[in-house]
Length: 124
Image (cartoon, rainbow, N blue to C red):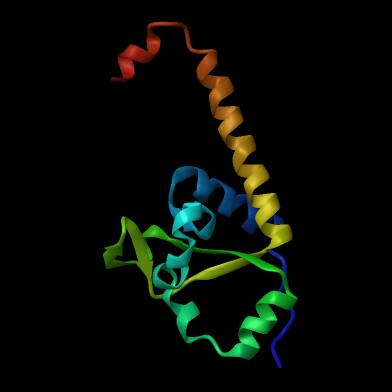
């Protein structure tokens, strides 16, 4: 029926983590808990999926849907973008991407701490 989910390569994981850090990607993890009912309105392809594909996603432990912001439609719903395309990650890939993104955030924070006080004012 459907092929098994293929985990992302190390290069793809690194690119996704960097794009997430840069804010180029919107993910289903960014939807507030009280807005989870909007998932189908944000990632529209989910509305049209056959039950077999939904079963495939469950079997393959798909846990995160995402898309690049430049793919968002012209409208929004309750402040969230609306996508007519999407990508997905399983639990394993999502965990690695988030860990790498957190490492990027930490590295940037650590570097900012090295900037002498007052120097950051020059950037304003």
